[in-house]
Image (tube, rainbow, N blue to C red; front, top):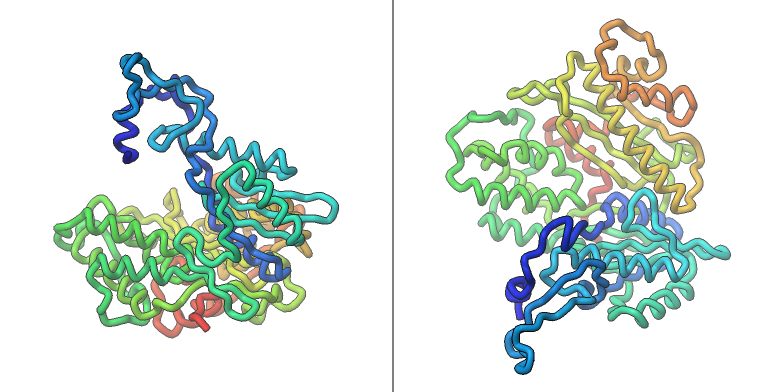
Length: 460
């Protein structure tokens, strides 16, 4: 019986009465990248589990009645209904009920739920440190004690239908390929499916996902006749950025026009696809070494977290908002990146850069909290590199210039971090600014240079 047929058997359920929370928390990819970076550096085992029929394990707290399924009707009591104790596929609260059941089982085994992400569970006892990442019914387990990992898997197998997939090789559509002691995260299969659906699997490759002269805006050409196709392809490209940070800026640009795409916007989408077609074997490299070799400004004694922040002032012609971007490294591995239009209009270049700094610091603060939970000691305060002197000075001097009075107070928490020596904001030349790739189109040579620093590499 299909999920749709099962759904038809339930009485009409009302939110707040028959069910409340419906979603199952899923682990953030930033956490996956951070944990994989630690695993590769420490050379820990990396196991993958799959829970079969996961939603059938959930315990229902609400009272839910089910009509008797066709073929299983009690002939003596044909008008009676079933009172459900366990969740079923098709119930709105089934994902949440499953997560509660799994959480309860993990807590009983000694795991503790993370405060930074509810889908991360940590076991720390007697020098044994284990991490468990949960994405609905897909689970990654790693740690410094292989025997303890086996014991945990055996314990879970007694409660759930656990399938041990062995060493992590494929997770959420991302292939995890070994490259010596390193890992390469690749979405080749997924990208090939996008190219095939878009009819561009044999298209001529290009060297960059977006040209330096591209400046997209609303109504710049005739409307694209198939807006549904546009939204489907662009939505698929958003997921491809998990292992391809080099297309993040271009994808963010075309996402701004989902409601009314034009022919020019579709041409830009096709260019992104042509770029991916020519770089299909590329993926995100996670290296074993934690030494930072990004550029001349960092050395073997660099801080554990290194970040780059940049902004393109008033880059959107329709509303004159700026684009902010950042790249954050754990050692030499890129673990977090972003390209996003800022929420407010900036009145100066300094303000847009300062807002970008604030967004970066917020992400750094969250990563620091995550690393503390993972029991990873911080060597020194993180360094944040910015290529605009005005924004750099503003982080240390509260009366730098009268023109900054209009900046919202909540952005000034960067100053507090700097004053308390929890963060070091330093100037970097524009030529060494890695975050440039997240804020503006670049020439082929400049793009390829930064792409290598983003740890986007090919298969062995």
